[in-house]
Image 1 (cartoon, rainbow, N blue to C red):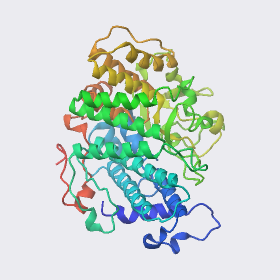
Image 2: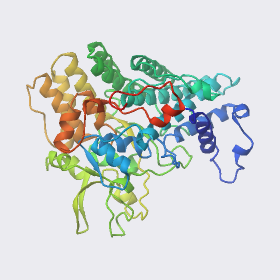
Image 3: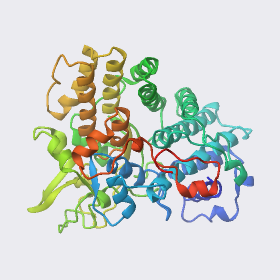
Length: 488
């Protein structure tokens, strides 16, 4: 984390000062020691914190620009790499090691923004006057939500990780050992519980779309409990997940048509609980994403995408698993366009042809959807199955709502515990292609090796791939960091 101390502050000041191209460059007159003078300064910094999740840099982009969702599906049975990157081929084939660049970028990007959240929490206590107590509450709630989310992602990916809950002001402060994952989860849960309370009321009329809410915190907290419950086989965690999910049930509805979830006009609406905005809804302009460039084929039509590269492509195993009557199949994949038949399927779910069909450079304003209501329903079905050692009628209702939206009808009745668990895993695969879910779904349900080898028989997947390696670059900076088993 040595470089993150400086990089984070530079990125956040750069993004936070982009409100008006006619204004002078604030980075020339402000630094950490004199920046935080008012409520407005905190709000600008908070906007920069969110910008750190997406803003492209030469060091790999923001977390959700590409690395996060690319890694999760490549290191699974969903996709294989078709592009020029050796590191991404290694992820697809499970031949990666501690020098893998995307793995390092994810680590670095998480800690960059974690440090921003720590700064926001610290400086929000130093501002003497707020226009309303709700302003301070919401800004702190945003910081707790982001910090909890990112430590949750780090814990899933790496296990034990350094838990740093204060803003770093020197490199020596960042050189700390890995914290046991159990303690990391305790911190995540504490942060998200605080976010639940602090985000109930949003005092910012111009900062609503793309902002986390208390229901987003409840949803993420439910996922944390579900994950820890599976890790420790703890029924109490499954029940805590149920309680959190029941706070969200009925507060959202499924989009009637699956394909409409990803349309630009439905950004931050309906089924979406929280999304990482790439469409300027925070009035910052931000950046476009890489969905079309990475996933779509190059077409020869003015109605298509000229700069689609098709770097990440679906496995035959994934594509053939869909029933032809499943509406998600047509919404997720593209096999031909205007008479041009491709050499196999590509992933198109993020392409809003009506809104962005004529773009020639492959840029897209589609958001990365981190939490949506279908996930709530499927987590609820999973939690109930774990609590009662088998599905009850409510669990069936939850999974069937997702299936019926897809047009495939109700799940087979009278399944036992393991059969229902397998059905949930399969439903999640069909529902969340390229949404950053699959690798850990397989890990959580202890199916990683089995399912990867069905889709990629030549893959080098091993038992230790339930975690990724601690980046070697970080271990050179910080000799206190140990390595995960299998990557020594």
